[in-house]
Length: 93
Image 1: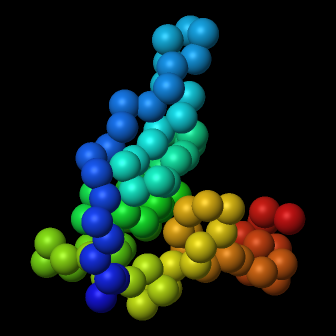
Image 2 (image 1 turned 90 degrees about the vertical axis):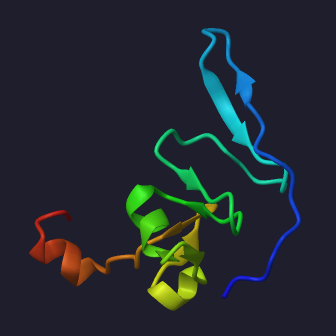
């Protein structure tokens, strides 16, 4: 289980010149600009997308991201990083 954090509600984010949100913030101090990232209002961890967000939830409870195979890289929890051999087999080198 992830330890409880006492945080405020999520902020509205800042707006760029075109009126679009450029930075999302949360009262816990987290901030992110990627449109596809997901921030959990329960444990306040930030994820690279809805799939990794969903992976850390079981029965309405947050699980520690590392316990479900997620790694913190570049400010968000992500799935395991693929090595060169795997990428070559997938044709992504």
